[in-house]
Image (cartoon, rainbow, N blue to C red; front, top):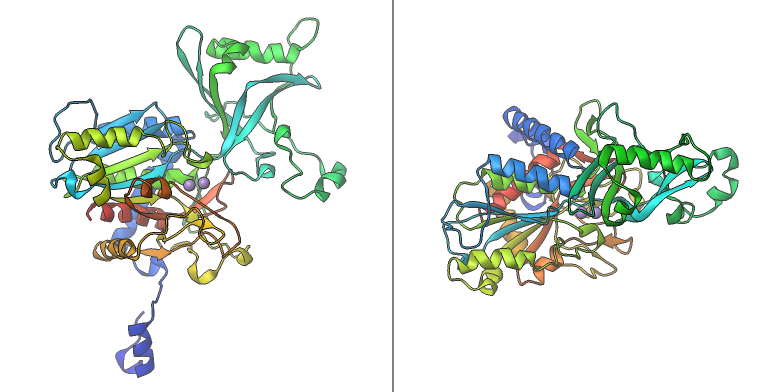
Length: 469
Ligand code: MN
Ligand code: MN
C-alpha cells in the first residue's frame, strides 16, 4: 500500500523518482487478471502433460493451431494479411506465421522457442540381459546431472521406422495403470566408494541402463528374459530387435504436471525448458488477427544439443519458409531479415536461495517477478552470446510498458560461474535483431523442474506485446 503523501520525506520522494524499484508480480496484478492467469496456466499444464517429446509437442501445437484456423503452408498458395499458416518440419519442429498488414520489406516479428528437452535416448541396439534381468542401454541427450535420473520413474516415448516403410508410435508408461521403468542406484550400505567420487563421475554414462523386465520366457537356454521382453514388444507394437536400429525412443520422467506449494503458485513438471516458452509463443500467435507486421512462431528441435540438424534452429528450413513468404510479396529475404526482430524465447535460471553463491542477486531473475529478459547469455566474458543492442532492449521494454507486461532483467549465474546459450545467436547470425527472453526456472534440466504461474503468464503477455511491435 502506498504511504500517505504527507508521510513521504523529500529524500524518499527523490528515491522513488530516481531509483529502479522492482516489485513482486503479485503486488501488481488485480483479481481479474489473476483469473486470466489461472486459465492460461491450466492450458499450459495440459499441453505439457501431453507433450513429453519434441514430436508430441509439435503434434499438439498443430492441433491447437488448426483449431485456431491455421492451415498447412503449400508453396504458391495465396497469402493476404491475416492468413494463418504453418509448416511442419519433419514432425519435430514447427513454424507458424500470421501475415501482417505491412510488407515483409519492413521485417517480421519472430519468437523462437525449442521443444526438445534433456532426456535419455535409447541406443540403436539397446536391449540386453544381465543377472537374469533385461535392460535398455541409453545415451543421454542434453546437459543432465546423471545422478538425478536414478530411482526416477521413467516412460518410453518415440517411433520406430519399420522395414516395410511404416512408422509405429511407441508410448509405454503414460497411462496411469501402465508399467513404468527405472534406473537403479546403489544402496547406501555399499556406496562408500561411490560417494567418494565427484558427482560428475559417480554415475558413469554407460551405467544409465533402464530395467525393463525380469521374468524369463518359458524355455531353455540363454537370454530368456530378453526373449520375454522382446515378445511383449512384438505383441504390442509388431517390432523385432532389428527395428530398434531405425527407432527414436526417448526415456522421459513419468511425472504428471502438478501444482507445487500450499498456495499452488508453482508448476512442477518435466520439460518446462523450453515448452513453457513454446506454449507462450503459440498461445500468443494463435490469438492474432491481422497484425501490423508478419508474426512468426518457431518451435525448434535440437536446441539442447547445439541447434544442429534439419530440425534445429541452424537449419535452412527457416530460410526456406521465410523466403517463400517474402517471394509472395516480391521482397528479398535478406532485406526482410535485416528489419526483423526475434524474441529468442527460452528459459533462464531463477534465483535459488539454496544456492545463493552461484548467482549475483541484483541481476538474477526471481520467481514471480515476471518474464526474464537476458540482454546476454554465454560464458566466460559473454562468449557465444548474442548481446542484444541497447536499442532492442529499449524497444521491447517500451512494448512491455505499453501492454502491462511485468518483466525483469535476468542473467545466467554470476560472472565466471558457468553459463549457457540459446538459439539467439543463430537468429542474430541471420542479421535479425534478437533478444533473449523467457520464464525463470528452478531446478532447470532436472527431471522435475519448477516455474511460477505468474512468470508463465507474463511470458505469454510479453510475446504477445512483441508481436505488436
Ligand atoms: Mn536447456
Ligand atoms: Mn532452453
